Amino acid sequence: MVERVNPKRRYDSPRRREQAATTRLEILEAAQRLFERDGYAATTMAAIAAEARVALKTVYVAFETKSGVLRALWNLRLREGRGDVPVGQQQRYREVVDEPGPERQLRLNARNSRAGKLRVAALVEVIRSAAPVDPDIEALWTRIGTEYHANQRVIVESLNEKGALRPDLDVERATDILWTLVHPNLWQLLVGERGWTPDQYEKWCGDVACSQLLRSPRATRHGA
Image (cartoon, rainbow, N blue to C red; front, side, top):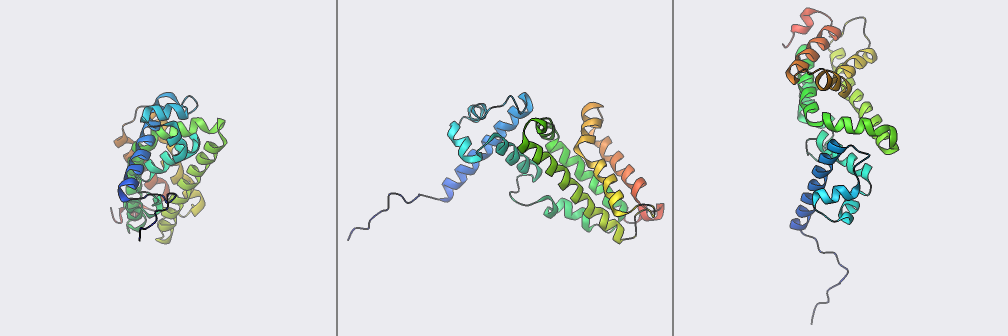
């Protein structure tokens, strides 16, 4: 008896999935080059396909829209290629939250801010400049700010639980201060426009965070 083969059954294999993932990454890397060189508005889906050396249909099937390409690219760079693992669950961030010393917490946070901006600063500028002309990217820009604020709040709440916050600060105000210090806009001003080195930014960010948020010199020395 001859087994019948369903011609409509899709063939799948680990090798095919790997090839698809490789193609997706190549499309995103090509898009990043074009977005950062030419800007979001001037970059077309056809240009992305040509840069990645794939069919235009392949780009549309993978991402649907140009804003979908940029969203996927942001998630890839923000999460350092770790798929669906959000920042709040990544080791570097958990190291900050779980650190017992308040000063060291803030200096590790400054270290993470520096490392993150080195990965995404140019891409952030693409998103920020595209937000006023594309509703999808405007929503992405809003989400970026909201997520930055939420992640910094967790760190401030940890400081507050230790009794390390200055007595004149509540969690909300302290979060606003820390969020401002690590916001991509501030990096762009100091490093992008004023020419600070990443090392200078990291030290300044840690120094200001400690001086503005921590209760006393004794508290800042704890865990230093």
